[in-house]
Image 1: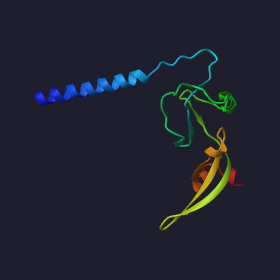
Image 2: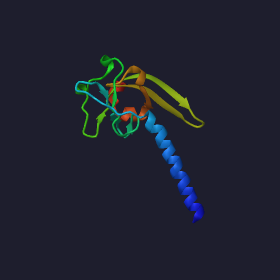
Image 3: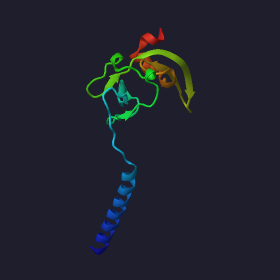
Image 4: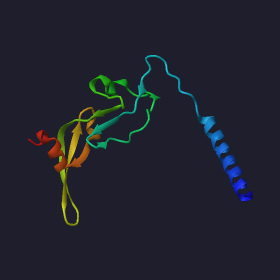
Length: 134
């Protein structure tokens, strides 16, 4: 019991020390009307997602506002996610494993930059979006 109390006290001391260090660097966010902010949304494509679903990431915009995709062009639902639609196939590659070959295609998605194109399984893309392979 005595060792248990000592351990709890030391943990409490360490936690309060860590909190005091972080409180010094923490500052409150203040926004004014017409401020630009980033909102973190999760685009959904089938079952997989770009990134992880999480809480909103509100922070001020420091970059160029012309590079931001307007929300009006996307249909964002109440869960702050949207359906991602493939636009074109940019590239194709075949990876050789020990006993089989896996074909992948590089897909360009709507509302994304070309640099953010992703590699997807070719057979799955043919099944879901056959119009891209015509």
